[in-house]
Length: 136
Ligand code: CMP
Image 1 (tube, protein in one colour):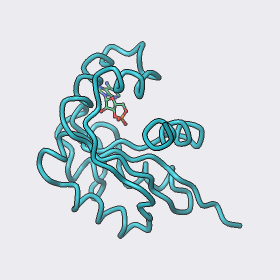
Image 2 (cartoon, rainbow, N blue to C red):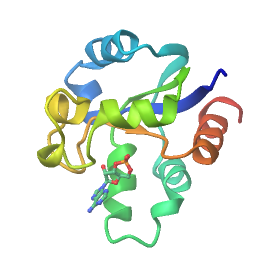
Image 3 (cartoon, rainbow, N blue to C red):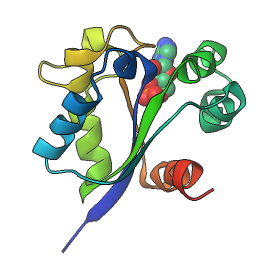
Image 4 (tube, rainbow, N blue to C red):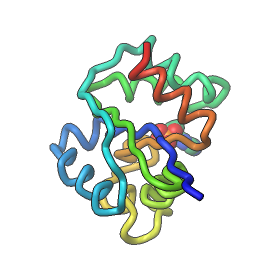
């Protein structure tokens, strides 16, 4: 039975600033993801607040939103079997210091804030996040 899913991936400002987008995209393709759509954008603080509103009660929310809107990002729709889980495995732990060898955050992340990539954490959030960037 096919379990093809789509997930939303973001290459964050720290990685775009270091021109790592092509290398990161290569990791996705080599791990079986199809990049169905992508665009480079620079969002406003208000848009970042809307995107990350699930985290609005967290102490790091203001910094998180300032950071995501601090420079250009690449947003992508990634597709493959079990895309949500597989992307989270490929990204590794949120904190690069705790991420396994070979994961994107271990390879490219600088800190828990500047952790280079975001990926949806559930099917429901993937749909919402894809809609947010691509269907609005
Ligand atoms: P991301 O997967 O984009 O989702 C929310 C982001 O908040 C997370 O990656 C981190 O970059 C950032 N963040 C900052 N501080 C924390 C923290 N203490 N715990 C979890 N996420 C954090």
